[in-house]
Image (cartoon, rainbow, N blue to C red; front, side):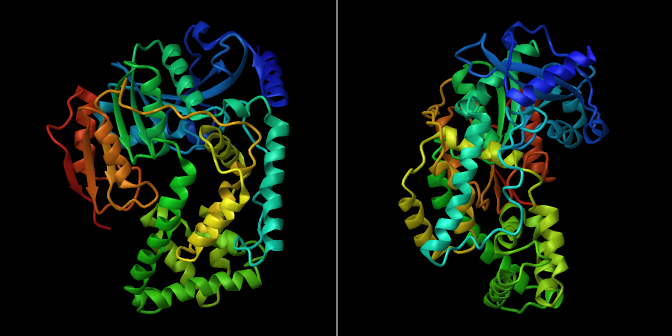
Length: 483
């Protein structure tokens, strides 16, 4: 049997697809303690599940999902946890969330994590070009047409490599495909319904799942709501790029207020000048031969995702400003370096498959040029990160309309000052889902609030809802934790 499994795994790696019976025919899941040390430390079991490559052809080729389970002694149901993404491995989060939830709630659920199709230990595990982000990249802000064309050659080559390696997979990498995979997981678990905890992009997966499979989603906590119309291009130019720039100004002001610690000046403008001066320095000479302006920006973009990193990044900027270039190399390697391209390959494949993107590069150029003039912190860097979708070799899907039909009255959680994921999208989803409740973390800066930020005002109603199905009597407003 071991040789048979190895042969099948090798075939998956070579071809990307294995003919097999559809997931519905599989009698349960072969759970066993996870072999990976990080998952074993969390007390997780692991299993795999073959699902159709194309759900319209249930007896055709399959892909394989890697699953995890934090088993309860006497489970009353399953809770599927989705950490967001797309492109993020989901198996470890089952253990992370289990470690943060109230013990009585953990005891009532088998908590399930999933590496979505293409991700991590699922097969095929996508990698179009493992060296795509090998540093240092050129400056992402082109100063002339020649530089822009040279930069443009990178995503063009990347899309061709993806098409050559995964031509059969790419048309089936949309959020709709992942939602249909989720129902195969439900059936393999032998459950009539599932409960669901989704963060960020995981909120959209949950909405699509409930829409496609009415009545199968029993309870849903949707935390840090992603845009529900899947217009990802508009999301970046309307929300994320200007939002990142605004958050950089918050960061500069915070650092300026702690000049006794960081010695970068008492005015936000002085700190900003130190940041952009450091960017210019690594453009002239990449730090450690590794961190140029592209990597420098990617490192500091984390101020927009996680305010808990502000002291670390302020120390990094201060150290570099005062002559220690090793600090920025260490920071880049710790929080921004790509180790292969699996996460990026899946991120790109899903976003490009979900919806139509502009196909004329002139629109990308014009939008980036205009926005960079007022929001230089992230605009061009994000533009290149997303740019393969301008040339993606497979036609996109039509997004599943989220109307509220099929979805339960959900508990929606969102921080007001999360700039990557707009609070207004949480308000819109709340208005779309009859009977839902919105828990607002007032002044919160970060996504992924429920059970992960130590906010009892948020955690208590979420735990009560998952345990009993009872939503709060009205919407709630919770102060963000201090610090």
